[in-house]
Length: 312
Image (cartoon, rainbow, N blue to C red; front, side):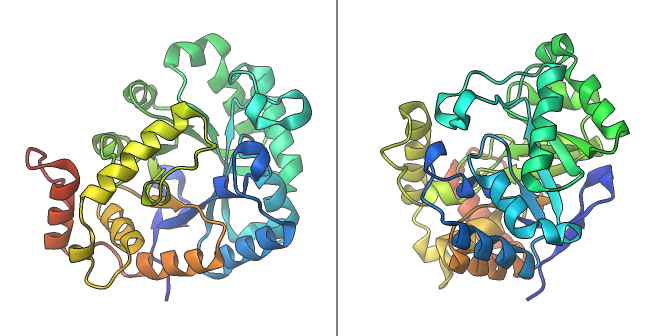
């Protein structure tokens, strides 16, 4: 089955509508599941072999960048690579004990150089600011100037923001970011209008935190500020009674196809450490958005009757 593709906003990049979020390759030192080198290699090559050509990662994701460099850098021409900046580089490299994010020009440049070394590439297709700092912080630290300098040098091709409310409208108003990575899932549709606004401004739009986390209860080992909201999303999804809408499809398929129905969303990131999950996700995305009646009923169950459905 061939994955659908689309243009990523004004970038001119052609990306698969299903992208791979590499956070799941972070490993135990970043609160992740154990991932062997061979497992990571098989998984990443399966991602590319399946037709997924958008891979998103971050220095914050433990071992993920090293795995990408080790296992698929020789296939670099086959995928669009996105990573983040502003991430702290702690002594010893333990993401669980890192200082706050740092958006100074020096740290932006050092982080990009580190990512390029780890992933064994000479450029990032997209460099996104991580953790949604305010415009005031970006201006104080001169963050955007350093990103543009890196772009001029050819070390990055396009700029992006991995953001969320309340700062995203201000980010869009700046007009400097080519791509937006925003939280958007069937259980958290708050950013749907932001996706529309970013697209109207000419930017590419990618959804993160889309599906996998709410499907199962969060691990008890997660820090409580992270675990609590994930648990609430899981409970809301369980209350939606998906089985009688699925018509034999898995909940994952139903939710992924629901997200693909957003009219101005370019791509959805889904992460996994299991090859079988990759195959199932590709098969689901290949079917395209849900039929309108199923979409509307699922949206109603997840958000309540007061919500006006988005046009599709």
